[in-house]
Image (cartoon, rainbow, N blue to C red; front, side, top):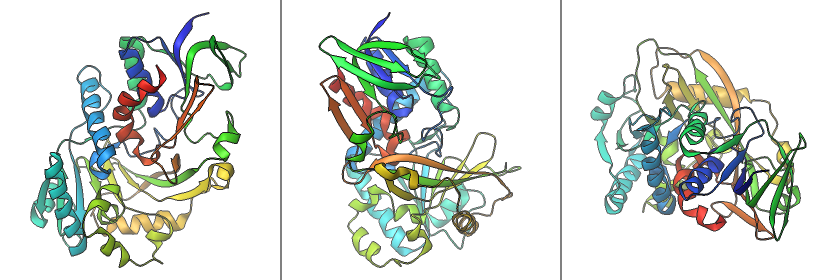
Amino acid sequence: MKHYDLIIVGGGVLGTFHAMHALELGLRVAVLERSKTPRGSSVQNFGQVVPSGMDAQWQQYGRKSLAIYKGIQAQFDISARQNGSVYIASNAEEMTLLEELAAINQANDYPSELLSAQQTLDRYEGLRADYCLGGLFFPEEITLEPRIALARIQQYLVEQRGLDLFTQTLAIGIESNSAGCQVHTSDQRRFEADQVLVCSGYEFQTLYPEIYAQSDLQAVKLQMILLDQQPTQVIPGSILTGLSIRRYESFRECPSYAAIKAREDADSLDRKWGIHILFKQTADGSIILGDSHEYADAAVSEELRIELKEEINQYMIESGKRIFDLQNWNVRETWAGVYAQCKTSDIFRHTIDGRIHLLTGIGGKGMTGSAGFASENIQNYL
């Protein structure tokens, strides 16, 4: 039986990038993924890598992630495209926040460009003039195709870095002693390693449910929409709008943020369902539109029902139509994504017997922050 330095349970973006950085340090690494291909929050998202939306600490991780994604893309096609991200203000309050964030970016040496209303309209086909007061553009940021990017990154790690990837392999138990760890799977296989890192996302029931139930972890359900291909309309990069400006962590560092938030309507539907409107065009010309946020503690995460709320989808489409005149608003798919986050901390970390490490709760920062965070955090598992 092959003995590994590190086994990672869970092949989402957080586990995959910890595997990559462990391989770079010369470790023998295996990833055990319960599905045939990644199916969790790492593929249920927009595919936006936007350090611009993060607080100061996580922006640094996000900027490292950008360099990592671009470095892999230069060697192996993972669908990364550098078309930048833009935040579009719909009123004077939001424009004030863009101006303040631009000054913060300048102090942090993170490139951004304030755009006038006309410059923003000229850059984004179909953007409505009665919505747009101006924009803030981040040229370094990238997009990925969420349904294929992670699988391609794993393929790259297997083919070029020596990762052992075991798919359709469900870990159901882990034992540890002074000699190391044993991971038992549902098909009665056994894997051995010095250390085990469990990155199981929002799966709180299979391994260590009692630990997750006593934590401040919660599951977050997001509703998202895929619109049909646009015949000729091209909208490059990540498009974040006024509600995103009012929601994202980076803007909380702006001097005017608290006063602006205090004036919001607490009873609005966007506040009720945690909605902010984002657009991201996929490589085939379709548009991903979203999203909303509903919450349940880890101990009762099953209370987040699988049904989609038509009220939310309709609100997102109506809001989207006030922002862009798309050529095609036909809905191809709707779905609910789920991720795990913490109520009071940035990420959940817990170690058992010095050898088994639980890591989850990165929240909506996963695609942007995981690669950079893992480059530093891997030192905890050596």
